[in-house]
Image 1: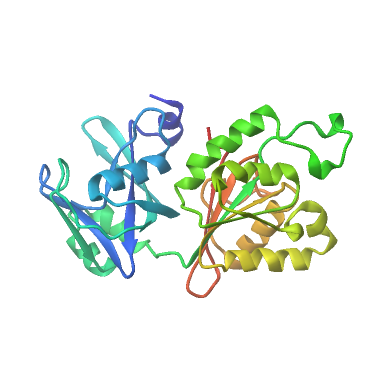
Image 2: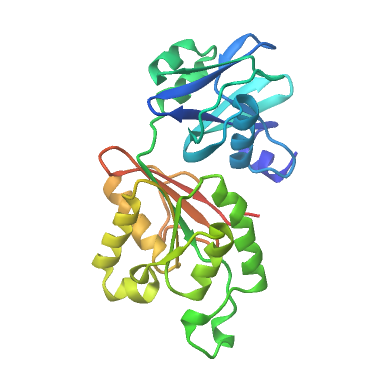
Length: 300
């Protein structure tokens, strides 16, 4: 049993998605069990649950997808012991004809209400009841580890990532890729820009002077307004900021929305967690308000 199995109290770990496209969600039929279910499968060695959800969705449906909010966990007993399946909402990124494979012989796109009636297992229906597609997604990343401030004589905004920080930035490539960001923004310190650079690749990283510590605390109201504007941007946006900013804006959003975060103790401790290279995945609903807040510690 791995540390993750022990931490989650499960002998078997798996992950899956409510895969959505427009107003429909995907169900798969597995001939081995003659059941209709949500795409899901077991965790592979060294894999995160989020990566497992995307891989299994691709294997069972043939579709590329990107994750949104974490929907929740389902627990039940199997011959191997206690099983936990973690589900995410996931947006299908392509429309291709389904090709039957070794595990799935049919794929159906139906409304969430119809899907809840069709699924074989009550726990899948419960997951569907909790599903809502996000209107927007904002990935809020704290910069990776940087060299010691005490050992840096120059402008602090120019202080670079450390060797460990560069490794963290490389790990963020795969992690952020699971969520499919379309645009990248960063506070102006070099360590923030360089944290996103590997994940951004050739895409531009747009500067956000109001969302670094210096600019934010000079005018917190303007900084919060800018943060809300990014949160309201359609699609998926990635933002890198600093530890003196992220806890403040996330705490305010949580307090005013009443959203229950995942990945952190509840009630949420203060200051809100924001470790180096950690990420808050924030989503909004149709009314523009915060719908979910999922925290992921440093990848890798």
